[in-house]
Image (cartoon, rainbow, N blue to C red; front, side, top):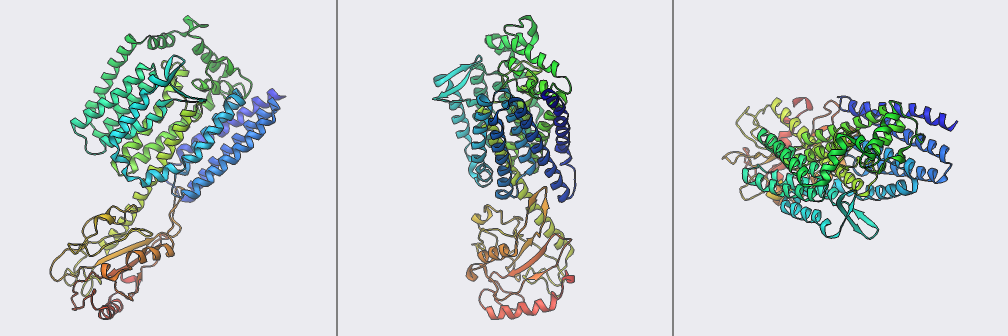
Length: 623
């Protein structure tokens, strides 16, 4: 009966994984916010149902109450983690959170099957603690604009940490790439991978020249050589591919791509000739059955497990994954194919591809070159690590000892991957903020293109003569916290501190006022309230209270900003459900055509502006 339950449950697993894998790509289709939210809700439902049924099968087979306890703790943990992301980071990518949680669920299920106390509990403890710790990473990435300045710190400290295994390292499976600190063992390659990508992005973030590319290449080559000397073939190959592709993305020149490929072939041949460990890996890959009970035992058992699983799998708990050496870490994909089937494994690969595409879209959407290169770097690193892991298990390439992200057992791998997801969330939030600012700018520009100056010009004194057009505008986003100095030394334009404000107060960086005789040196400030707008599950609501508080902080000093006391703002009314445009006009101390001085005579200014408001801005239709 238990065997029948395990076998039939596989059909449910496959069905749910197929639906989830399809949803990884349908979320990229254009649709309404409500439909996007519905897709992500279905993803969440299927992954929690999968988690529940899997642990139900494990308990039915083992009768171990620890399985139930672990399931309950994990279910609560995942629900809390999703809740925290949605409320602490309302602008985060909910799709990315779902993918991260689902991959961890698959890993916990398989590790509970292979060894509950040996692997699953330890992995969950590590992942649970660091999932909460890395919650600060998106905020840190979004706010810490100085990260791009630590160019040499990334390279030098990363290389030093990578070389530390020669002093305090130990050898595992032929590779000396582990550090033992008491009961804790770390793999520096996993953590240096993050600083390595930050180093390349910071070096090539500015317009790269030949000298900078050569310096970057030397440091990256040093990283790769250290990994080769440690017999870490997978890590060396990963670092090399990441550098070549990031260099190509930064420059757009094919010479670096093909030149790097040629250098990689030469380096591979030299490593093969100089390192016996590399030759052994290639020999096992070329013919594992030449020594099936010796050096080829791991590969042959992996192939046997994949073959016995077939398309639909033997059923959870019905296989023999323990026959494969290091199955919990390097060869967990073989265990997945054996018990859950090749269809489930293919869907798992599609989920990884969906994450890769999502990472790429984030990299393409962000405008800042530094964050763009970071996005491309982690996209390449993530999908190439999946390729190395899966390719080595199925004998497509020589085994490299690389783990499957968030699924394989390994604390260093899980921590670094969680950090990568946190970094990409931060880059996603930066791209989203840039997208909002672009919408504000386009909305304002379109409105001014359609609006003409009537009977004496705009009320802010942008005078191009009677019937002229607006010559220059600064657009300000709602809810910004930074201050403003309208009265700078030149008499117009924001100061440098405001220009660099974290909320990007000044979206249009062109000068708003041309200092010419007869023109009022005023400004037109626009704050756009988005009422209930949602995009891909991200809330972007700015309340009237937030806008008022922002405006008060901006214009609370008449002597600095030239605020016109008593002026009543004009609302345009609804624009297709996208909120309102609220216009506020403030003088900057220069003379108007009527002879008033906004910075000196408050009463005269008030009378003048009220007169104009009644004469020229009678109704929203006038806009």
